[in-house]
Length: 164
Length: 329
Image (cartoon, rainbow over all chains, first blue to last red; front, top):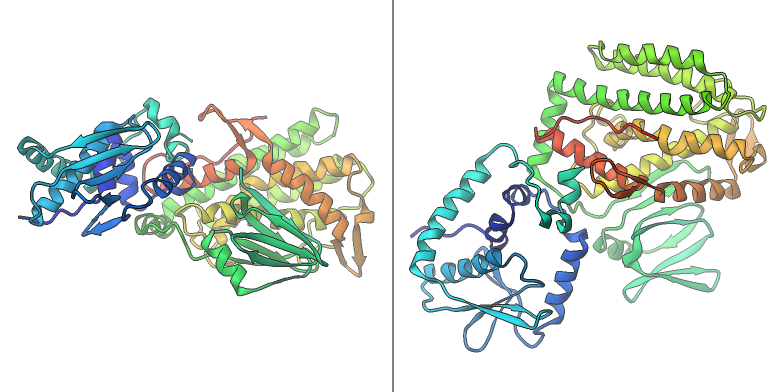
């Protein structure tokens, strides 16, 4: 079985915006000055302090793993939930390929006082094969994919880059 | 909103816990480090490596000016935004003559447009610069036909000569200003232009630093002409917008007079007080906002510089053809 070579962020961005995925991968990044990104970082730093944080396994970085062995991903809002779910599913898949079976995940929204359980199904695994090849195709392009105008663009760190 | 810090009073700058402390003859002042975008140092200051490490970690560039107000150099924190893909594309655009000419042309074409906007503004206010406007328009058209960088630079030189010769008409305070003299400037207006241009240069450098562009790879100027020659390229566009307009207003309103300068034999520079007045105005100007047509948001002049850098990135990625920023007000 081949190694999984993407980061969680890349999987996440694939569901948010292909252009962002392309730019991010080519190191054209604007994240750290964006106020929403900074807010997200603060939430991440100030919640679940008693748990071990930022566990790096290969290319992925898991926010924390609780004592039941559930992997956790902390997010600010559930506006782009599909991306979050796939990010966690991808983590589970990565662990599975490494031989760690029956892992479950959870997305925590401390600000919304909500949590979401994530499981990886066989259908998901099949879907991921397709996702990976799509991502590879996007990243092989010499130019970034064109701008798509969505409501989420307004809060994106790439907003000025895309629209100016 | 992050701000630029301009320091005049001699002081000791230190890292105090996780913030900045300025010790001015025993009087301690604090500034939250999060609110600082870059620091400009005039006159004499004392700082240590502990502070530089801290500034490096916070990614705050420091620009240093000498006694005469000339730019002497910058402390740049280790490059934060690097993209091999962008660097290579940027170099490609320098190496390919056609691609390089296109960018060089855009810089000068936009610069000429902004020069014309300035002149037209004063022409409408009764200054007799109509003839110069016409001549510059002709030269601006001929930019397009230029087939080499030196030729392009030649036309630019002619435009600038005409432009500077209009200064006497615009500033009606009987100040002698024959032609532009640099290194060192020889009279009042020249010293203002020199000082102003070095400010624009550093502001652009600060913005370039926050993009993936390599500030040493330029198109109009030869790379290595001065260290960060891409900042010189971009400053062609912003000098008329940021500095020239401001100089005219300040002189015409008597906010700055020749008393603010010190004159030696063939030598003229701003006194500290004059420099402060100039900087205060410059900083205000950078913060002034205009409604951006494409973004449909209010953006500051300072932000316009950043957006210009983004446009260049998009151009060299082959996404969207670059067109230099032209004032529309």
